Length: 242
Picture (cartoon, rainbow, N blue to C red):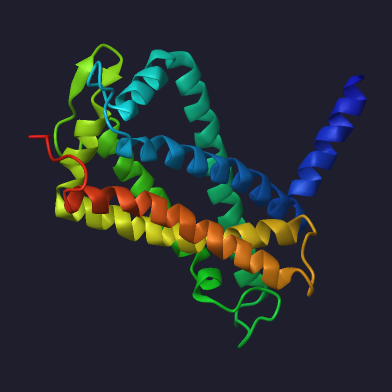
């Protein structure tokens, strides 16, 4: 491919991103990436409910954590990719928000083109709250800078089970986690619908169905995440952890 053709394609790409449609498309793409991570992370976290191996006494979530940490390079590749997706998602959403405010300094009394719910009105603030919590969550359960001291079973083998139990026994950590998940639920409700709307899978006939699907998925994800601190605080899991 010639240098002129490459430059032309780059100009078209930049030009497309400069439009509202281009930004919304990028929001949808990064949203899909982050939704996939949220679902995958949930499946990993729910392994805390699996009893320990009867032979070794090792909890499944610790086996899972050891697997992740033993693939150090791949783990960091995924982390950098997710960080880029989060950065693009936040920057693009802020750009669209500022552009909308500049074009319409006085908001409409009613908007008929989006779900008439609080989820649509709290996307920016909820998204920033989620981003702040993600940073706190990393400092809490990944680096150990905040909250109880992290425990390890050996090299590349964090004691994920004990660390989760110790952290969620601290009431304010559990409370912050639950509040953040509620914001995530609202964000997913509107975000999934907006993503389908952006790619053209929305019209007056399928809109109610799409809204119901987005609501069910968002609530199911939130219930899954919230079940963990609730299980710890009620003693359903972690009874043998000192």
